[in-house]
Image (cartoon, rainbow, N blue to C red; front, side):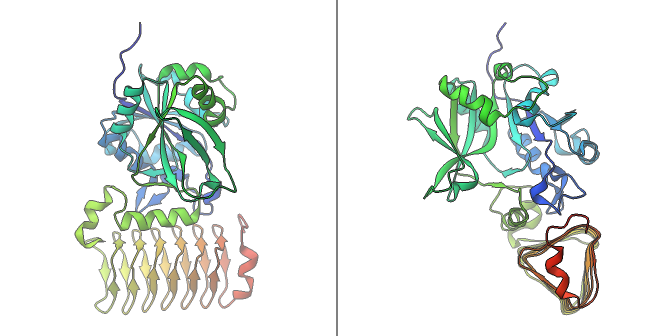
Length: 386
């Protein structure tokens, strides 16, 4: 008996990857629950699903699955039901979807890549899928530099004509696969079980050649947060309200959230857009912002400057330190007068006074750098567990 098509009320969220490109931010915490403006990243996906009437999400997980479940739980805090399916070994994007077959309800379903920040209109995506009557519909977005992505070409009727993998010499804007889909359950029949299989290479080309795959072009916000630079930019976009999120309500028209229990010295300045979490302490003469996030119980010392930066919970920034264009992961600390410019410090790093780290350097968790040892900073680049 066939099931009448309707707007999907269920979704699969692919969260099985290790987030290697985002290290050291994800060295200790899986990417889906890495904090983004003090919320687990995947919470933004759940918010959008709830906004469009989705009632149930299945997390297809693998790496550190138990850590994701510990943060998200049963989904009640996000307004929908969440369940979990864990893959014993990596199955690829298609294999991970098929691994959820037994727990999915009848009917169509959304699929989200777990590293996509977007306010895509899911209702419009689903309506396009219903109108076209295909087996799958892909959310497409236009980018200026498509060299990192697979391009998608459409026919006049909106069906997918072809895919072009990561064209290095392409000039101008192009449509790319943005990692959000609507699929009919029959698509699962094209996926072999219990082995590595890609939906982008193994499934979509077959659907396209059969004339059963369509594209939905949405001009809303979209970002892949797979790298430290993109992770940082996602914070800026949320702070400046370029993307529709629950944080916007906290920021308000002033583009500023200051926790009621934060302590800001009388001579300190907080410059919007800015988010100051609970229990934060900002010393005399310090300046925080614009485009800064301070996580819970972070400390900014006297005269320090923090701009275009993210300091997660319990970070300590010493007096007269300067932090710009950088990410400090939970529990990291820097000493007096230290300068960070385009640096990423992993969890629990201790950087002594008088150092300067710049140029995209990544320092892995628990690294300790003595005072005034700037000559060593290049040696730390890319060393996991240094």
